[in-house]
Length: 197
Image 1 (cartoon, rainbow, N blue to C red):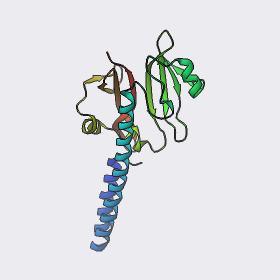
Image 2 (cartoon, one colour; image 1 turned 45 degrees about the vertical axis):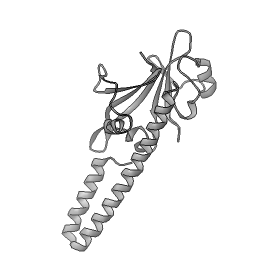
Image 3 (cartoon, one colour; image 1 turned 90 degrees about the vertical axis):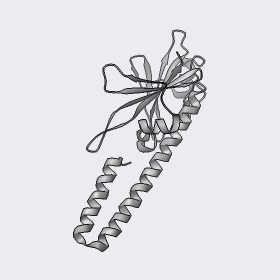
Image 4 (cartoon, rainbow, N blue to C red; image 1 turned 90 degrees about the horizontal axis):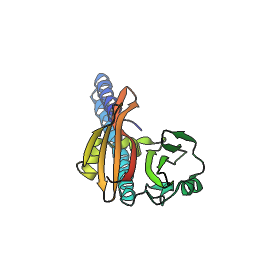
């Protein structure tokens, strides 16, 4: 999907080209670019809103949505994760990582000493990312969930962690400088759910 900045540049370019070619072309190109931009943004935003709501609702139960639903913080074990997802593709730090597949989001799991799940990390999808985590911005979080309970800087990175309490659990939306065409945007890089402090 396209970012707002790219779509704005397309609209401006359309207006400039239209003005060079004549007034008739200007109004036709501007109308087309504007309606296309709106359609793409509305579809992306609605997909991102749906993803955000699924994540929030699942987190209130100590879970994440999708094919890992039912794996619960402090209850499910590493063995249950392996039965559901198989052996992790990679272990990085404290997380067992499962990469996204076509249409399936990626996940990470960290465990307590007793092998129950301590934390679930949601990486979203790689395909059509704009309708998933790539469409969730700090403004969208504020519009949908209200003001974060805490806003933290992630040490050693340029990332910001927006923390929302969901009863016995908390959601951490980690916003980073994600690469896009011609620069970076401020969208969710990943989401963590863990027991509330």
